Length: 331
Image: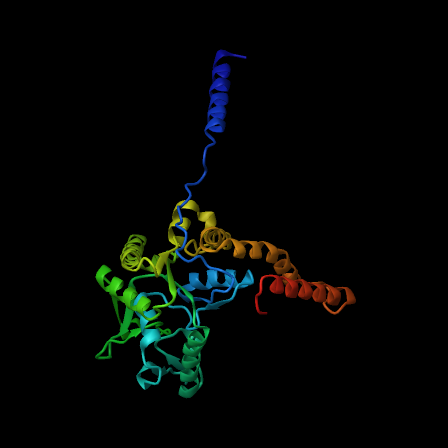
């Protein structure tokens, strides 16, 4: 073996020994402060906001924890969320009929679409009623952007929650300043004085704005949430989903095929980080006990009507009842 090969071997070996001794880290973990009031088994949690709210809300439901998820559909910006919660749903000005004779509400997405004005309004009222009836103890609001759209033809320039495939000329696009965004978030928190409010910023990348503009938009949201959190430290908390996606999962394999939305693996990871810091010890024990039952409930037998499959379902339901009784949770 030549001197060159010996030197290469020594250098390579030294590198591996150094890496081993230093226990080299592969990621930079985001520090997540514990919540002032960690979530427990008996919290009534409501998720409102962007599609990321639906992803994390679905994870909570799949884990057997109660959650109300986006009763008004997907809403992206603070003003649209505030309008949905405060506007008078009886006002005819909030509704319109399209060319296919379908009715829509400017405040919501397609969840409330209906064949008649009465049915559309009823869907909006039902969504409001769900939130009131749920009476959440914790509200998780996921913000996507500081940009919003309002109706150009309206003197009051009504801020819409969804454009319902109408032409862009029907709207005026604007951006909330930090002060405007902060004031809007303050008002949102004031609507729920007894609830803990957890803000998150969606990691979705708004390519239509341009990536630099998308980052600026997220920066306004982050600055505004920070300002509100400082003013209301006993009520408001922040969960860094955006930072986890960008700093811990800084690789395109953690994005979906469009390279804009977080992948299922990323959502799973962010949910795990959420459970590490935002729920209490009893709830973590419950999640551990529930996991095998969750997998059993998701099992799809080849012959669902066979005696073995029926027996398996009954045994799973019995295990679920015993778990609910153990943790004093209502089915």
